[in-house]
Length: 336
Image (cartoon, rainbow, N blue to C red):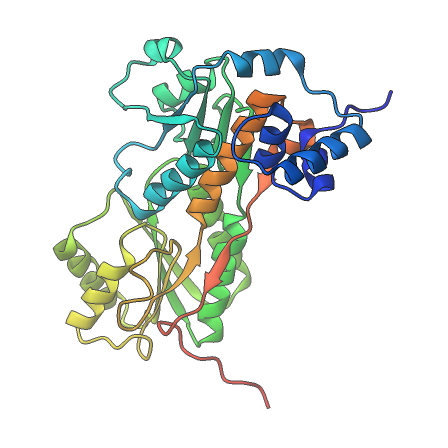
């Protein structure tokens, strides 16, 4: 039996985004007449038939989406940019965004007046997160959910393990022989993947790698004490990777205060980029996790699910990460 064409296939043929295709076919939102015509022609070519049940639900929706973010990290740069991107995507279809408070009782989720949910970095075992995933409403997550948690409707995923290995390779090419990784102590899939990537890399590399787990983001004085202890315990440490959002600038300041030159004595990489990284001295090399794009993509996936239903091959979408090489890395000498 021939498979039903998906909305993503219509969008690809019309050379537009998933959200634009959805709005064009639904006759809503800011879409030019030329684009609307192109999308409808693509749909006709593919004999695209929207999911009627989903479309009916979409037309009678609440017009609001609930956003779940991990506890105690909402102030972090990554999650703020993720929220801005999500809000922008939903705004294209005149849908509002409601932040789910962590004080909400799990048994109250069913009473929320929202059409679906977006969740970023689900924490294993979180009762409110579990209740949202079990709500029966569409749920799109940024990153896969931890093992043991209910499956979402769809996910935006990144290759955190590869990104970590790439960062460590760059440090090694700059001459690093003893690296310290500062990792967060939280049960999220991206953390597990990044640590697994570091572990695999360490097994294959002739470079010492020490992982230090942080239960929370330390204040400036705490970061200074930590870095002083790290360097006094092992004076061979010549590179630090910060996989905790908001820590890299504090580590750079601590190194300066301790009289440690960056990158001559210690190279520094942040696994989470932010606006601060390129403006400090020296600018800090970082992995761009592209939070704004992640937010926009999750929002457009949820709108597409509400409009006509995501196809099976559309339920997991990959977001490529980018590395921003800056002066906190030693230049690599070109081979003769």
